Amino acid sequence: MTAPTGLLDQQSLSALRRLEWQLRGRRVHSSLVGEHRSIFRGRGMELDQVVKYAFGDDIRDVDWKVTARLGDIYRKLFVEDREITIFVVVSDAPALQFGSGRASKRDVLFDLAGLAMMLAIVNRERVALLHASPDNVRLFPPTRRRARIMAAIAELFAAPVPDPAIPQPFDFSPIFPHAIPRGALILWLGDVPATLPPSEWAAIRRHHHVIGIRVEDEWERAGPAFDGFMAYDPSARDLVWIEDTPAARAAHLAWREERERIWAAWWPIATDRLTVDSNADPLAALVGFLRKRAARNP
Image (cartoon, rainbow, N blue to C red; front, side):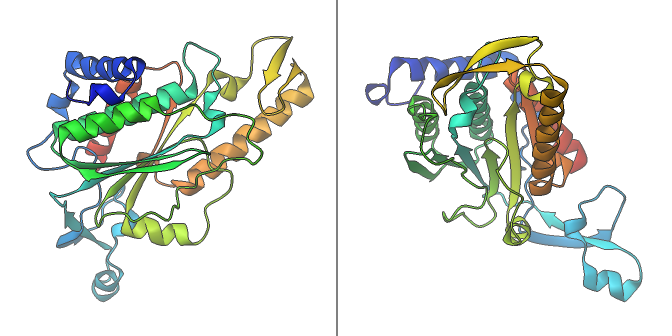
C-alpha cells in the first residue's frame, strides 16, 4: 500500500486495501490487459485505414465521404492511442445514499470507481479523477504514478457524505466544464441524469468516448415487497407511509420507464452503458462489462 496514510482515515484505507486484495485474489487482470491496448477500449484518435462496414460496427465510425464515393458503407478503423487517459468522473449525488440491502448505491458506485482505476493502474494507463458533490468539485490531475492514483481512490472514499436535505436538487451532468485530455476515455459514474441530453452532447461523444455507469437498487426495479410500511424521507426530514396500491405501482412503473428512457438517450449504444445491481459483485459486473466491450470491439 503506497497511499499517504498520514493524511487519510483508517476506514478509507481499509476500503482501499479491501479492493486491492479483491483484485489480486481474483486475478482478473490477466485476461483483460494487453501489452499496450487499453482494457477500456476507447476510440483511438489515429486513423489507420478504411474498411467495409459490418453489422454491429459503431455507426459513428462510418466514413460518409468514402461511402458516397464507392456506393457501399465503409467505416474508419482507428489505432488506439497508447497514451490514453482514463478520466473517471464520480457524480456524488445525495440520492445515491439509498439502499434496501447490505450496501447503499453510493458504496457500490465508489467501489466501481476504485476498481476501474486499479485496473487502469495494472495496464499503466494515465488516470484522472473528478469527484463532484453538492459541497465541492475536486479534480485529481492525470497521472500514471500508482501512489498518486491509490491516494486519489482513498481520498474519494474519505469524502464526506452529502446531506440529502440540500435546498436544491444536485445533478452533476455528464456535460461538465472541466478540461479533458485529448483522446481521453471518460468513465462517468452517477445516478440517472435528471433530464434528456442537450444537443451538444452528440458533439462531445464524437470527440470523447464516454461510458456511463450507474447502480440500481432492487426497490427501484420492483418496489418494496410489503403491503405498507413507514419510511424516513431524508429530503423532507419526515416519516412517510408507503402503500402498495395500483396507483402507486403505476406511478412507479412510469417513473422507472422515464429513467430508462433518459439513460438510453445519454448512452444509446448498449456497450457504452453499465447498470450494476446494488447487491451484485462490483468487480464481476465491471469485468464482465469490459469483456463484452472487448468482444464487441476486437
